Amino acid sequence: MRDFAGLLDALIYTRSRNAKLKLVADYLAATPDPDRGWAMAALTGDLDLPGVKPALIRALIEQRVDPVLFRMSRDYVGDTAETVALLWPAPDRPLDPQPLSVGAVVERLRHLSRSDAPAVLADMLDRLTAEERFALLKMATGGLRIGLSARLAKTAFAEAFGLDVEAVEEVWHGLSPPYAELFAWGEGKGAQPTPADVPVFRPFMLAHPLEDLRVNLADYAAEWKWDGIRVQIVHVAGQTRLYSRTGDDVTHAFPDVASAFDAIGAVDGELLVKGEHQGGTLEDGGGAASFNALQQRLGRKTVSAKMLADYPAFVRLYDILVDGTEDVRALPWTERRRRLEAFAAKLDPDRFDVSAVIEAEDFTALEGLRATARDAAIEGVMLKRRDSPYSGGRRVGLWYKWKRDPLTADCVMMYAQRGNGRRSSYYSDYTFGCWTEGGELLPVGKAYSGITDEELRQLDHFVRAHTVQRFGPVREVEKTLVLEIAFDSIHESKRHKSGVAMRFPRIARIRTDKPAAEADRVETLKRLVT
Image 1 (cartoon, rainbow, N blue to C red):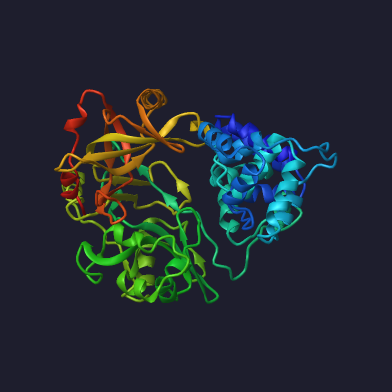
Image 2: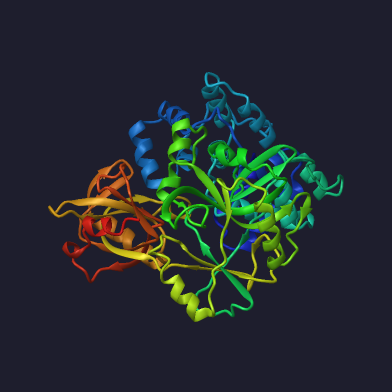
């Protein structure tokens, strides 16, 4: 645990991407199996220790220190693992001279019953230093929040052993921690893992924002950017898997789509729910409901028959990665498009269609069509170079996304809460509201992005100077500061008293020039509901 704790500590205080890569690569090269494999599982979010829950950790620390002291400290620090690691009382016995290894800790915690978990975890925490306790608790509860994404961790693995990161990511989802085959391949002691007859995930091709660039439509094809979630569907050896953009397996939430995909291959598309919101019918290339309808299905481990009937899902196909058993990612987009249309003809037309290419004479004409995207409840336009291969990640000049312009509203800050990670010392998460016709301020959203470090310090100072009440970690502030909020769309919501919920809200600017009484009304937002 000592070396892993040192790695986490170094990563937290390192801002440079290249320096983070070197830290992880050096750790992986110097650490034996299975410790490094379990460490990689923790860094990539693939480690599951069901016997250890946040509630258990809180119960353990509140048995050992004043609960009020713990809660106040947690509020100040902004992170439960760090707070517990620092507050945990030193045991009466000396620290164990035989240090705990990452592998030993994981193996013990993986097989714990709920009744055994408190005693086992407490004993481990007694044997560790504060830094090691922090590492253990972070590893046990997930969500490391150390400024290292799963993609960056895999890149570090690839650099540590001189491998291609795309090749690493492609086999990743067919393997399980502690990844013995992966490390054997990296060290030249084994062949590249190629799980036979396993529907593995392949990295998505991503797009750059178009911004101020104008492109020649002779070189680029244009498609609508639909408002759902991007998925990859893979079928091999009678198995079908649906993967999200981050590589998460979402098959269980969409069994209706999975069961209908029975052609061998792998495709890329937009997961949607049927409706009349985005376009017309499935047959004529429309038929999509709002993103709010899709949200009813997201994140579910099981889906009821009523849910399947009320929110039937389908996929609008964008691209093809594997046609039968042939990997076609190296082919140009024009050839893949031909392959995709032929492949889609073999699928259930009630569950799959192909995203149509937008017909426009030139870029100016396309601009006019894009201007209608919000009226049609479409997220924007995609531009794909006609000769582009399907390459994982973002490649300059190949694909561009040209999203519709965001909506904005002037809202009043109501509550603030500390952030996590490097923002844990600042009040960086803000709940904001709009006025009702009767003069009541109701919450309409929450945001923490869109601001610079200087603006973060400015807002943190406002929160501290204008707090009127505290509710645990949350501070209520004077209703005097207006924030201009940008958001992609707004939907009806039964969970919010205001009746609306914003999608992807972010802070566009701080409106110190505007009186709070002149902020927008809830009724104004309701007229924007799509």
